[in-house]
Length: 340
Image 1 (cartoon, rainbow, N blue to C red):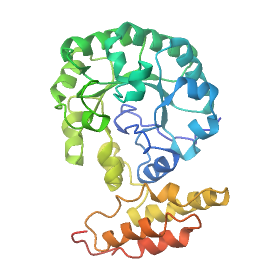
Image 2 (image 1 turned 45 degrees about the horizontal axis):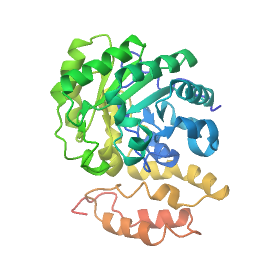
Image 3 (image 1 turned 120 degrees about the vertical axis):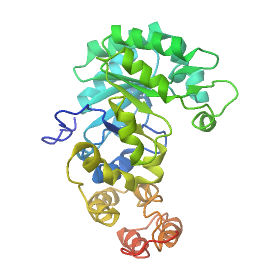
């Protein structure tokens, strides 16, 4: 079990989901989450989706291990068997996660083959059973991340049916990716971009379910958008923009929580990151495990292109060290911004 540091994530007066970083496969691993946490103390972070069976039978330290620094942190589970999900949720809670989230939105071939993820939009009663089983198994919040519908479903009826079912099961919050998922004809990448966004559908859902915390995901980018959505909803969840332009996280604590930013800028974040990288390398890990998540730093700064090139050419090597990361950062001007 990873103990939670005192006062981490205790944002009195704010929804626990006021701002969160979306779970993203192959991206939001434990190294990425440390980078994000160093830039925002209050953002809620999510693991990559892990199937219930993998949690139960796999290498748990590798699959769901995390650093205590990462709190508040949610474990996202994939699956459709209430008993297996309950068992996996219990394991996650014992590991010290702050929340268990059920994935009802991923449209990949893998989840379609297993009839979970976005496929569950067609099975609202089953989703309710899954939530009820997990709620009975753990004392921490159980939440659901979903789409507004799949394929030819009517988003009004589909999202209402899912919401009614999970509310009856006691769900603690709903995170709505405000797009349909097309299980036939679109790739996972296309499903993140082609189906039109319908933020108004999420607004209507919240208006009809005032007591249920509802967060919005999908296409949210600039910090100026956050407040506009928060006028209607309890939270915003930012995905690709937080990964590809992570410095936006430096604005989260001040803009949304009225708290100081943990570090002054991306340079200070890299300095704070060094002890974590050093421990990882001492344990036999590679620098690249961290630096692959740093490509989006320093947008618009003089030297950003050279920074990215140095990461790609030197920090990927098996024997790369912190000196290589420092050399990459040395290319970037601390004062002068220009086209990268």
